[in-house]
Length: 92
Image (cartoon, rainbow, N blue to C red; front, side, top):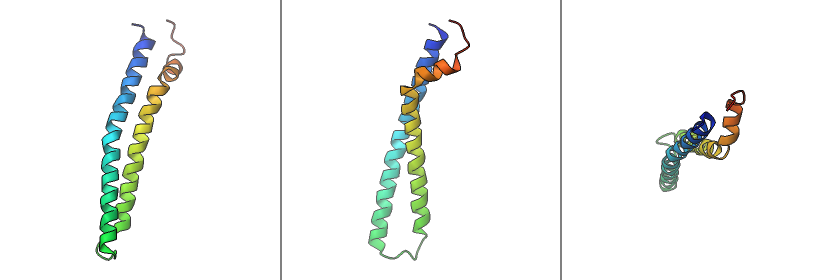
């Protein structure tokens, strides 16, 4: 197997790993966000704790997990281009 082919396969596997790590975090962020929404609707007042902090933290967690998932998709789709850029000086 040539080094470019191996690098292409490893890049795709890395992309799959990013996607596999991104899916559970997206799901848990959605569940946490729904729980926070239900709690805010049930309480009616926001005097006990700082709900905007929790909402902001949930949004940051959700966005970071989506970025991780999008990076995985990008690595899978553009792996050949990326490997060509990294190995452009290497002769087969």
